[in-house]
Image (cartoon, rainbow, N blue to C red; front, side, top):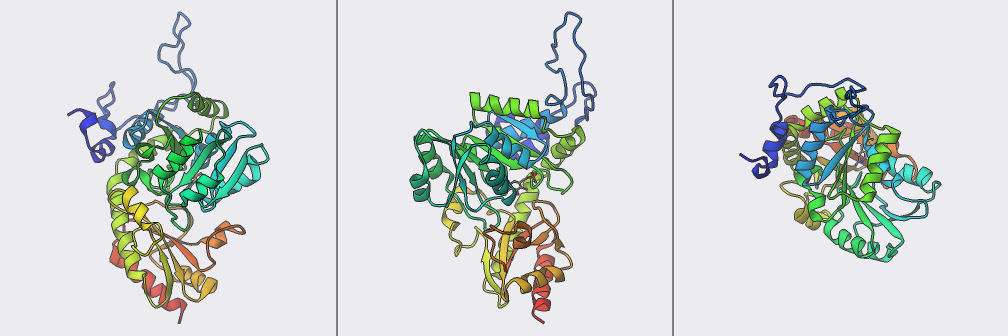
Length: 383
Ligand SMILES: *Cc1c(COP(=O)(O)O)cnc(C)c1O
């Protein structure tokens, strides 16, 4: 069967059906070499010279991601932040950029504290409103629109197609942080985006044991070549063992994400209207502001991330996190183990997270156990 006709589940499970030529191994080797032998006639016919950005251990993970996103090419980076910042560094000082008010906090901080000093002109807007995008975009001057959907930590949904129409009409590229969406649920390139970024640290690897990032592009361009050379020159790359772990983690991407989606939906429905919960934020709830767009744009589920606002304010929220047993109090997301976090404590000033908000990353444990543990913690927090 031609790989092109296969469902993404099959592509992921077998890592594109890759077999090692030398040994017939069905799992890939880890290449630790930093340098490669030059041919006697002074050529490098293997195509590899030096491992700063040419390690063969990246190849399979990059090829799998390209296939799952329906893109042209993928580059792995040492972290999600290394991937995201490479896109902004490929711009030119003076360029205008639109970024969302609600977005991954560490990238927002970098944009505010570094990228603006370096000369980018950045407006942080309500990216979930096409009217706001239309009002803020400057044709010819805006070079990049950065989307995150669903966006941390309120799970704000941005309409990728509508935003791309406005951006492209003004001559701007669109990049999407699809970390929470994952290729299982959202394929931004197929909806018009130019670049999709992942913190591969999260769902793609899925086991809370690798820091990694990726960019996948829909077509080659001078802008993409600039990103390639930024990676090659700055060297923000993965070690071979981390790349190998990521390749392994992606084999189970589909069942992990699907399980997390089903459980997150059940958890959201259970705690919506709960006497000790003020509000549940989850794109899968019909009451959620972005639900309709999410239902159109996300395939087969609304993701494994949700937030709950505890009745009783900040103290109650922190007490709930203190009283869970099964959920783990930790930052990050997208692993097989469920995590809970008082988000405002992490993000500090400038956070859009209300003080009573707990961010939940739903793993693959029994959903009844997860609900019972949170129920008990809510009761203890109010005892
Ligand atoms: C974690 C995360 C990042 C940053 O990824 P790192 O691998 O931690 O650098 C970016 N965007 C989102 C949505 C994330 O969750």
